[in-house]
Length: 258
Image 1 (cartoon, rainbow, N blue to C red):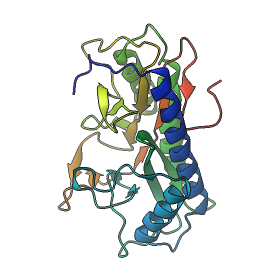
Image 2 (spheres, helix red, strand yellow):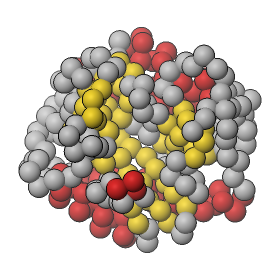
Image 3 (cartoon, one colour):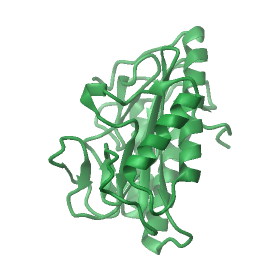
Image 4 (cartoon, rainbow, N blue to C red):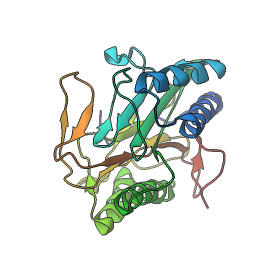
């Protein structure tokens, strides 16, 4: 997939994408409230399946390139693509990344959030989550008509570098809407080329993945789960946005960026 190509969605498509994105956002928000220490990641996956079904949609991830889960559940040093299993129990102090995709009436919503379990966060966890979330919203602010894909990545990189966090380079954001992955790719760092120029009607899934240590990652034997190479914590936040002149519309969240 290229940084230079892009999909411009029709008004009809955008209306369908809005509904799917809203459904995905609903599931993500509900899950982040409902998961508790003592649950297995398989139970979280099953809960996600029931919430997705309640929207009238289906998982965008289940079966995608053979993925076996309803959502991606990644704990602590896991970056992305974690698979729910009855053998893994979440506990107080864990950070859990919930990546949720929903297909509704042929349209796709995709979003993610990393939550800390328990009432007390360590300073390092607070630092990681606060700055990864901040990098997402700075990237969204840069997603205006007339800017370029490079401007989005540069916004993430600026926050990450100031916070001294590693930027995962192997996995990127992407266009989304009619398909789960559409052009363009959206790296979380400033690229040499400008990439596609942002135009109204583009729908982008922006998803910074930042680490407390090295940016380097490895894929585990299951062929899916990606972990940080040094075993340090990772966080992942994602929203889908619609390019709309100088005020991006966040499709997977009910509130608008200020």
